[in-house]
Image (spheres, rainbow, N blue to C red):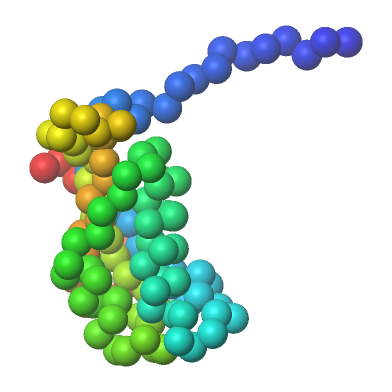
Length: 120
């Protein structure tokens, strides 16, 4: 029996969108050598943003970079709240028309936070 093909949905990556996410960094840098933890955390944030927003071009805000490195190279913050903004690339010779900007969102605690769509 041949399984009937369902309608294949294309992700709506051509739209501008903004969302707030909480990233659990402890599980992403578990078992990583101490001197590689902060750089790996930045890579994991980019990987998360690529998957969540569907763009290969991901840019990290300097405030988020400073926050991730604030406790040194070994001690990465356990969780981080980020705002993912899918934006249009103004560069004419860009291979992709959209990119994702990742910004840090200050929160007092992470209890009860969920992914939120931000109307900006």
